[in-house]
Length: 311
Image (cartoon, rainbow, N blue to C red; front, side, top):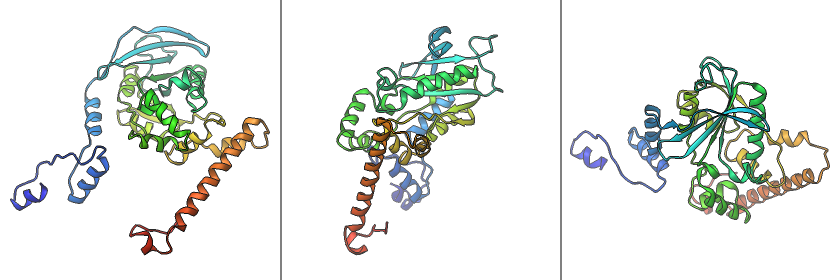
């Protein structure tokens, strides 16, 4: 279509085509090749959500006593999909119960994605439950913060059933990323537009964000919120989730500092610690074996194809 327009000496306004079912990379490549601006569907959705209100309060604030402290619960509903979200607020500003935060004062914030397996059932396969409890404890101690619980984000957005499919594949050796892609699902499909609008509605502009995930910073900062400090959310690994956490750190870019966490328990001969060390050694052995297999295929660049490169 582009070449036809050029041959006809007509200006090119736009080209629309389905490149691939997950065509962001193909779109980016084509735009770069022909020097065209482009926008993905996600970009258009994000722009729309920045310019329009997509959440509404569906209940008045209510006192919420918990084992971690007393909070005020604020409930919201998404105007896009109808999913309800809840914010547990701790604030010493009482003049307006609907605006418990001041824009010129940074609040301690945790944006927590729903994880019923970890948050409710105490699953050891992830670190979600301990992170949730840690966040509530910290917010209560700070006296000025909010835990925003975003529902509808189970399994980084793929849903509970798909998450169980991914778990089944992980039991057969895949990591959390490869399991998702093998199922034809995104590694992380969460979006934070609703969460950003909820925080803004509560009066927050500046925040100290409890997170290890750099993508969450980008997702929230793109909606006019300012992250003035990252507060790490590290919890102790266990034998059931050490592989999962390694994948998040090594392949997904999460700032977990696992080596420091394990070094802090060095010399502790508990059964759990010994099991973690054994699993870590298995991971290292598997990585070395994979590297050796990669470099042993073929004897020269020509035998391995044009894309061969030394490792």
